[in-house]
Length: 279
View 1 (cartoon, rainbow, N blue to C red):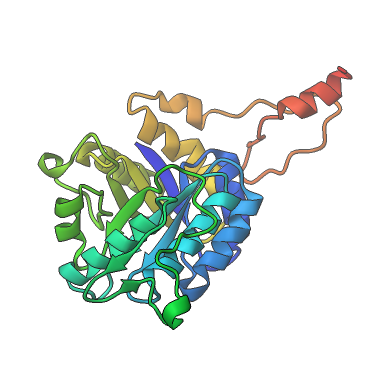
View 2: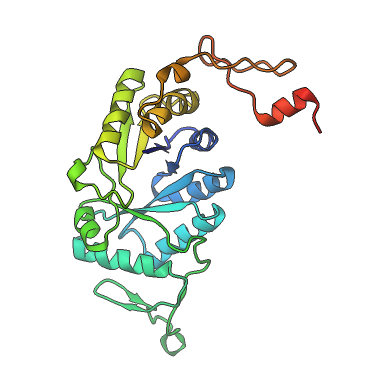
């Protein structure tokens, strides 16, 4: 199982950069109506972590929502994941919006006529185009979609798309061939959080999207990456390694930032090269 981070409202970009540096699989960028703009900023300042961006069906035209995600996907080099929330729509309404959303990411010219939407809308009379295409197209061949909301279960069955679980899914219900995201709140207590991660692994979740009870950027490296990532990825990982004192910095290096008694984070390869005066 992998671990992602639900970014807090405060110091969001700093948390995103810390998650990227610590090797977390994803960050959830949820800032309400400003989610797309914030995700674009996070995309520009991170390199590896996937960006899970909420898409609230019914809030805008599906083509508009598709364009926002396509831009984020291009800015991030193909790291966007659409967290589609069915909100207050019925299953039938959400199915139409979701279908149009995914069609708009296909990089093809599209037309659509349904109970809720007509594409193109034909507002320009005889000069209206016969079809439209979303530009830019996403960087990915297919944008991953995760579902949540009141109609998520029905849509997941109809489309085969994964849904985000608010609590641990029963092992019998998990499809091991597709992502199984799980939202998980961390208490900050190492023992309790280790138990929560272990339970998430046992439930069959493929990625736990964790939120921190206390918003501390240092906890991303010190609590999640150092202690919880090994629990998620390697259930038989010897804890003595994670809990041991980290190696001291090499001679001539800057003093480390100590965030806990006896803790010295490792030097990077680049700083080691500088210490050795290697070309």
